[in-house]
Image (tube, rainbow, N blue to C red; front, side, top):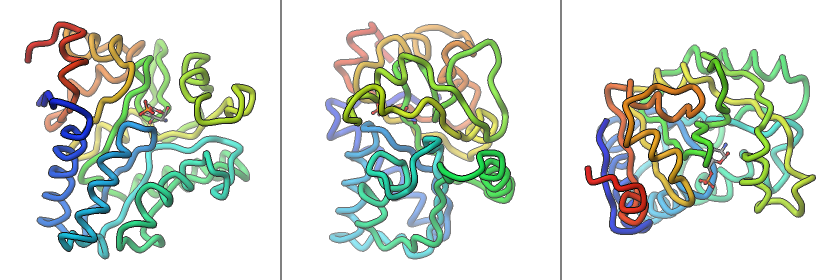
Length: 243
Ligand code: GLP
């Protein structure tokens, strides 16, 4: 696993955008695995800028997203479909017909069948990841076992707390989500994690131990042959990680 220490979030976003740009330029019909949360927003802004100002071309790119809240339609401003349109797809020349975010409403089992069928047919060239304060990837919450394929998760109280900032009140945060499983994530050709915010516990488990701990799902990134983690110097210093 390659760890890059950036001087600040802006630099982390630029370095992440460099990795995505390189993949899009060398394989214009690549598939990007994308993530929501605040961590990748700066990188998405930088990619949007490069699309407008430097001709970075997304016209043949496909994408599939990590997860979606159960109960929120794509028109809801906290749904992950809305987030992706608002933070990236509306600002680049991607064909939205080539973007997939799992459905949050309707029959959950049916939605999961569709999500798994799409994942089974898709080779993800790079999977963008944030990380939850509890170490979750996508919405794969800590537990005694982790799940291979796309499935429904019950959100942990700490995840509901962490994501409450985006909703009018904590009660409005959905209790369930559908998410790629850990196997789907690990089968991506490359993993790119951008770390921002209060993630000291998760980063200590990932970077300062050699454990593969299902109670901190991000530790499984260490098993991947081509994983990149970009974190800010202040966080590296806070956990005593020297590289
Ligand atoms: C949500 C998403 C995760 C994301 C996490 C961290 O829980 N499902 O994929 O990594 O938020 O969000 P943030 O980047 O805002 O800290």
